[in-house]
Length: 110
Image 1 (tube, rainbow, N blue to C red):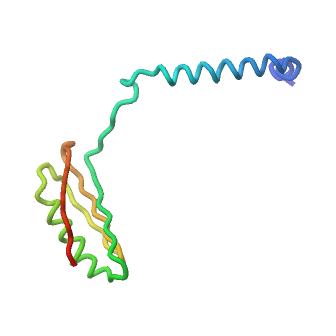
Image 2: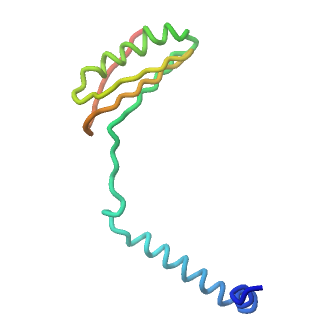
């Protein structure tokens, strides 16, 4: 048995005191952390998930994915656009060359 293990077993109050001190110091450090150390991270990508229940993949592509792609394609700074259609759902991913704030109001009518 190492000397540290022997001390920890013999002096349990010392072990608990060290645990309490480390926990208290961790909580204090977390509360007093500067905001610059946790920056806001914004990625130049977004995704659109659309659900069209009980529709074939081709119907989802024609009625959902293509109109979504057409709406997103006009946004400035668009680098690439990719869609995946499965039975009942569509996943569209848009990647932008610069970070921008997007607000798109688009309503699909079936």
